[in-house]
Image 1: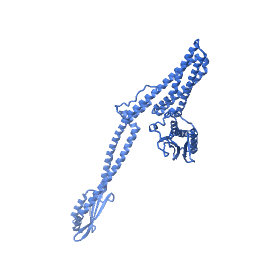
Image 2: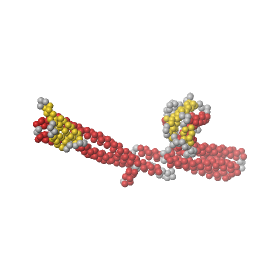
Image 3: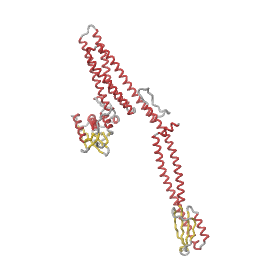
Image 4: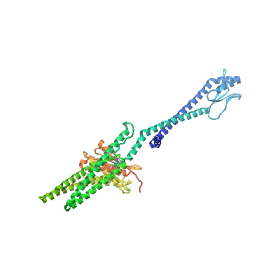
Length: 530
């Protein structure tokens, strides 16, 4: 229990939530208390006004008659009776001869004072004196002060009790599970046995159960892909060992071929090691959040060339066995040997081309997983940079006819990494050339640059087809492509996303632009000139 309380008090989320509740409740309490005090004060003042009104309506004529006959005993009795009224602290009568009768203590501050002329009515109105009445506000202030203390104290107790209860609920229902999830993620290792994530609570279907299912599913996918890669490596090593044994028997005419295959094999092993190292870096940086899809994409892309290499290597083993049999047979002919060697050469060429394809895919994968540029930031004219990019893109995609316009301040200077920014813009514009204008007769691209004091937004619009909703959420994922049958590898927008991230900016997709089609917005910070 002590450990739970310490974790409860150390939870930043719970502390912030509790502090917010206390502050908000305190503000509400202060406002409501102030409103109630003002209302009470107005009610008390209204009561005093009613007392004054009653005195004016009931007592003035009686007091005037008492002064007219100068009945001091009756005057004292009436003054004493008036002094017993609520909140009346002083009452005084002064007649026209300056004789004064008073009861109570006269005050100069924190009082409400009223003066009433005393008029005796006997066929005519005769002024006989003046009545002075004071109501003490200090009594009202004391009542309001005591009430304020009581209200604030009771609300403070309620606020802290509610905040403490909410703090406990947040820790019990959220923070405790988040800490468990964090510790579980820190302990994840592909070299250890798989232990499913379990929040150690009664079975219930909520967000944490969905998180547990997603994490466990992701781990299973990653571990399956990882085991498949390891098995592929083992199978490849076995094939290489068998090949080396056969090469020793035919060293006289296969030395050059063996050297080439060995070099390509070493390159493939190096590429696999680089892929494994990059995978581990992604696991550490992203906490396993997106590695499942990425590894699946990589495995899917390199599965074909590796499978072809294994098939070709197996075919080589078969050719070598046939060659050995021919060499040791008495009726072997040079034509048969050459035919087997040609088949062996074709298999080797197939291995080389597919290993080259796998190496290219791995290099493309490295461009997404690693730093793409180590250049220093420079100050350059953004308008000239955009025009160079559009001119080169039009040349690359010639004869495709696309009208490109640019709206920008011609004198705008930007201090940033020009290579990374050019890569991001080029990939987005090229993506529009490749996918947007399939059914458009007059293709248009408009680049609009919006400047702000601390950032620049580059809006790349086109009048082509929008990206379907089921595809939008995957467009920035590495190796996701809808044109795989045409040779696409799905790294264009992923590389653009990575380049913008290295610039400490962001890239977003908008389905409808002023030009009518979709729009990509690249936002980068405006750094001070070096």
